[in-house]
Image (cartoon, rainbow, N blue to C red):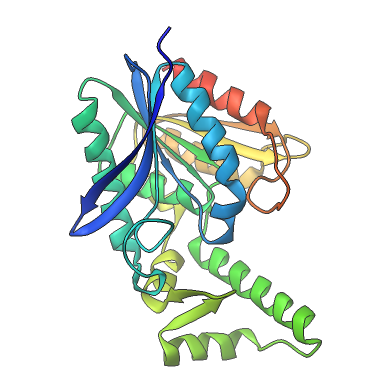
Length: 271
């Protein structure tokens, strides 16, 4: 039996050089593109996404993990990244997989903000299927969550009252970026993320969709059920499931996530 290879690859999107790892079986039955989450969530979930890619490849499913521009080893600075550029990056990664495996049906899979970006991509250009691990439903609320976490950390670090939300937003407007624990996030990217609305995107996709709630009680939230219903109303064959698992995007220690990986691989293999 030939083992899947793990090959570093480079490709381009609108002049930007992107880097990734291609997990490729000898005879792929389908292909998966993984869209990573944002900022520290990318770092915390890295190992789980690696294990997912290896599990998919072991089932003869070619899988590409890559860094969006301004992230990881891809070109560009984080403060110059924009939502439009990231969607171009995803389109270029899709084209790279299509070039290498022209007969393989493609599934996009993302975690948190990566899931919402995957949904935005398939809304622009449909594909066989999409897997959404804990998608961000409202970009505006997600940005508020980022700002709240920043304020809490500032208060805990300095012992003083944190800079208020309005003051932080004013500073972003003045500086053109947000300093997020040493990571500069540009104003245009913040505005782009704030504009994302998962329900609006879901209304433009009619393929197969798996929505996954990751929680200790494995219970699907009403909001995720509503997103699945929006997909079904648009003609998609969508299901929302709960997986009893530790949070994989906000923990320093390693999380195995075996149930999450197994459930996802089985669903993609069944397509």
